Every structure is written in structure tokens, then in C-alpha cells.
Amino acid sequence: MLSLNGTNTGTFEIRTYSGAKYSIDLDRHTLVRHPSDEPTTGHLRRDDSEVVLLSVLECTSGCPALFAIDLGILGVPFTLRSTSTVISIFRTTDSAYELPTVLEKQQRAVNRIIERAANREERPEGCGQP
Image (cartoon, rainbow, N blue to C red; front, side, top):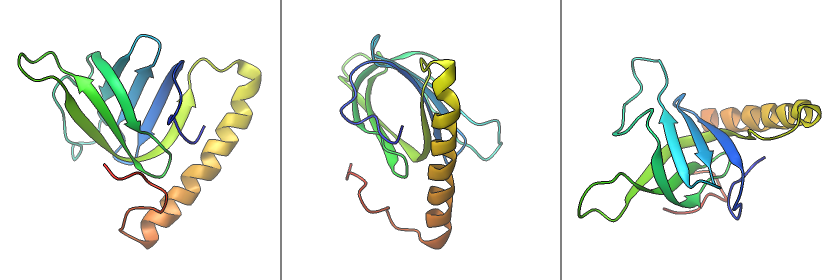
């Protein structure tokens, strides 16, 4: 899967260039960020904790993702959480027979993203503007 934009249901795992992994449940409106084990990766409030997902504003392979979340802070209606470049999006509820095809497509997409990132610094064409 190359994008969550326009998707309303299902559970997904998003991996980003920084090594962070996001577990997204669109049915329950929840998001969990799992930071990379690398010491250079930053940590965010509520890492490894479920937060309320208000909206997926952008989530496309090759672009940074942008989520509106509720951290449960009194007087703060929402927080925008952006990610480093999304390198893979997996529907975690796919059946076993579909998985190899999904993995092959994801690997090709990841290879293209890494190649583009190595060749330029600017935002990839087609990414939404936060």
C-alpha cells in the first residue's frame, strides 16, 4: 500500500526513515509510535503509548506523514505529529496469501524512496504540504 489518504478503516503499520514504527487502528482511532532502538532517534511524548488519532492528514510512501492526535492535555484540543519520510505502509489485517505480493511492492517502493532521498534533499514531488 502506498498511501492511507482516503482510507477510513483497518489496521496498519507504518515505518519511517528514522526507524520509528507507527501502529494505526483507523477503526478504533488510535495511534502508537514505537521509536527506533538507535540512540540517535528522538523520543516523543507518549511513545509506546496509545493516543487518540483524530485525523490522518497525510500518509503516503515517500513523504512525511502528518497526524492530528489528542494527547489528553487539558486545554490542548489536538497536537500535530509529523514523521520522517514514510518508507512502508502495511495493512496488518492482510491475509497470508496476499502478503508476499504486498512485501514485494513495498520493497520496490522502499528502494525508490531511498534512491531519491540519496539524490536530493527537497520534498519529493506529490507530497502534501503540512
